[in-house]
Image 1: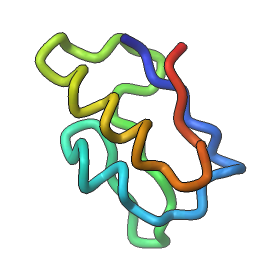
Image 2 (image 1 turned 45 degrees about the horizontal axis):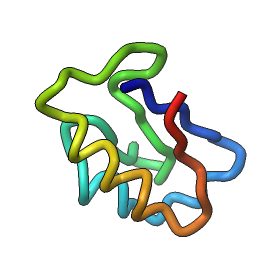
Image 3 (image 1 turned 60 degrees about the horizontal axis):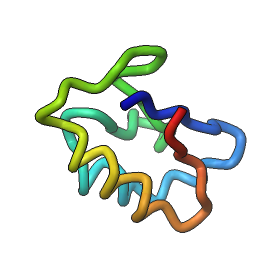
Image 4 (image 1 turned 90 degrees about the vertical axis):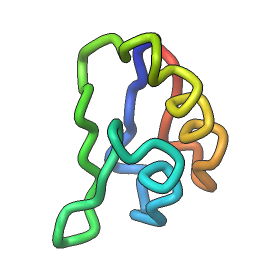
Length: 64
């Protein structure tokens, strides 16, 4: 699974980082950091990745 982040839509709520801390983080300015940008998630992180997508209140994350 690959996850695409819409950085313009992201408001920095951080719910994705709570659900998938290995995949997502927020930097010091509150901007999204996607550690697997442009890459397939490892199989063991797919469930966390899906929870992160589902938790985003502004739909800034989607499967590609």
